[in-house]
Length: 305
Ligand code: SF4
Ligand code: SF4
Image 1 (cartoon, rainbow, N blue to C red):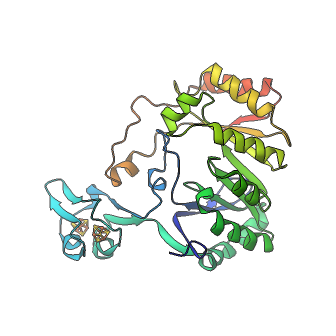
Image 2: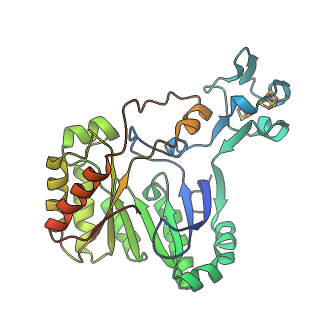
């Protein structure tokens, strides 16, 4: 696949109102270098297409087994079992499934295909002050493709937002910043070890990138997913607020996003264990206290997107 011409997208959400100003079209790139334990888009993590299967929809007809050119699935007592080593996510099974129990997550799009989809939304963008948000997964994993899309949107004067973990090459981020009106930048944990424990990577690069991005003059909204007992403690929030308040450039707004336990079905569709036992959103009082910590550092903070 020529990455300058195509990129893998796992979802396209119209009429989004939580991914930046106005009514937005959000494109979700597939692939993420992080693996946050609380991730609500587990299908975003792998950079390749994946088969999803919903057992409760399956009627056990066996059509998918016959259609699979790689002998990757078979009918078991629990429904269809797929050997992920053999599965090529070719979609032959999904094409014949009469119950829509099987689907493929991740489709390669060319830029002109995406621009056709984007262009249809321009009246909504114009009426609402909205635009396009590039999310994921991690958009920085698709930088060459993304830069061209940003340029095409810019030529149409469409507002452009990037939703990022900040984990990528600094040079890429700064190139992207030249063609982006708003960054939605996730910050989770300030303690390096805990960051690695809960997201799979260290936070040094993320923090350095945020500093570099802020110094470039980019408009940034910091997004903090809040999970009770993991990152809602005063120490983490104080460190986070101190770091953000000390950033160069324009003052960043803070959005506190309480954890929502909504992804269980997605993990089941991927055949993966849903391991968020004990993860909950902080209570209302805790959320209020969290917002107050940021406000005390001279920042504008709100709960929600
Ligand atoms: S996606 Fe293709 S390879 Fe995978 S189980 Fe379905 S038909 Fe077989
Ligand atoms: S084709 Fe669909 S309904 Fe039939 S066995 Fe396969 S997944 Fe189940």
